[in-house]
Image 1: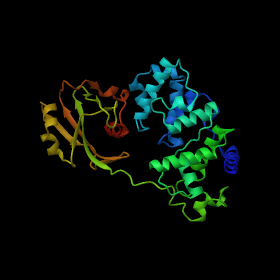
Image 2 (image 1 turned 180 degrees about the vertical axis):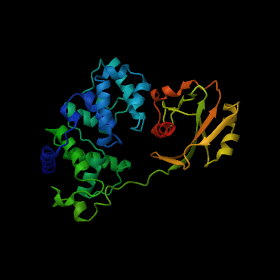
Image 3 (image 1 turned 45 degrees about the vertical axis):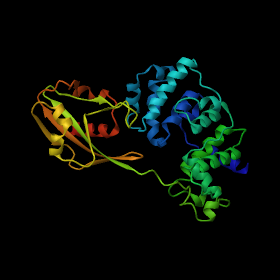
Image 4 (image 1 turned 45 degrees about the horizontal axis):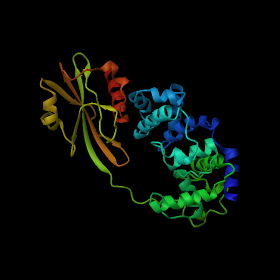
Length: 348
């Protein structure tokens, strides 16, 4: 109990002024928690403010087109979060009359809501005593108690959840959960934690045994796959191009891209021109040039995309139905968004 009281005392003096901290409305708490998964507060803040202005209620979000939601999410990455957010908004609006479930047990049934998010909403909005366990919590607990069980193993996930629950101040679970997350983000940081001024410096096992840099422990990551992308950036005389929606369950589902030639290694201009995709797409004469002289390496969690953008100019192409002046309306991966920014800057 001393641990939780000390944390809450620290939190009351050091907590961050964040817009979602000023409400108990589960819609706003849910939005913030989904956005901040895999995302730093500084990056997510602008998106949160934009979303709450555009969609002030769950009904507004439910009514939006998925393409609009993805466009507003553009740049945050992990786009399945946005698709699940939209799906769940529609479910809550239509099936639950806009009312969020008030218990962990019911919240976790919603798409895109896992243990952490359900615990956060239940504790902050409804005062239900459920401990959150996120990256910050893993770090604080593994260091303080000197736990070497890998946090991404089934045994570790179970061990830390049980431990977090035993430490929870059940009289103020929302405050405690926010306290331990803030403490991990601001004080017990991944790099250069503030051990010298730490409230727990006299009882932290990790500090005593010089394990701070080693904890928390993670099992070896899944092998990263290299992929080679060649985008065909089409320009016709009437300033039209091709953008098509990515289908299936792979990366960037629901986002738009230029025609893509994927190869098993880096290829040059001749390889592109002689490819089946290029021949089928361009029956007429073309001019082709490489926009980026050096491959762009776009790193995702389990994939590295080695990317080249080929600008292909042709007089006319029947499939090119999107005007360049309208291209900004479409949700695209950040990789393509960055290219468009650089390309239009160079063209002006």
